[in-house]
Image (tube, rainbow, N blue to C red; front, side, top):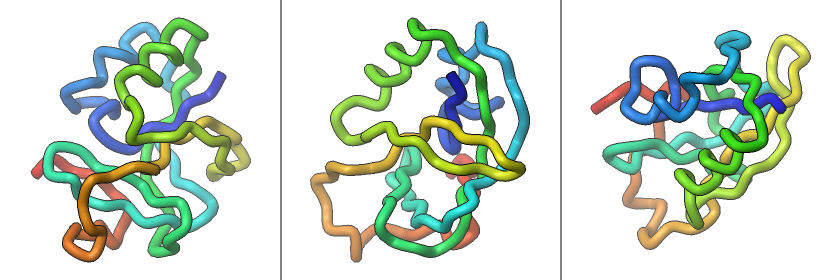
Length: 116
């Protein structure tokens, strides 16, 4: 199954080790626009706010790795299928639960997560 990652699971970031046994497919971006927010140590993407395409990486993961990622992302995120360029479909994690007011959170206008 393809998974699209855009934050701390990307190459060179702290949690990429969860994907070390998965096949890297390519760097890409979402076809649709979403809002990436800066949660200090990691990003989140809000599905119903349209700002820009989200930049990230696609991996082919097995069932066990997918379960590990689900546990890592926890209750704040929901996994949904998205369309990616150039014609890929993959699972992506959207921020669904957050204990803060979004108007106080920095939006990352270009949809690219870099470490703070």
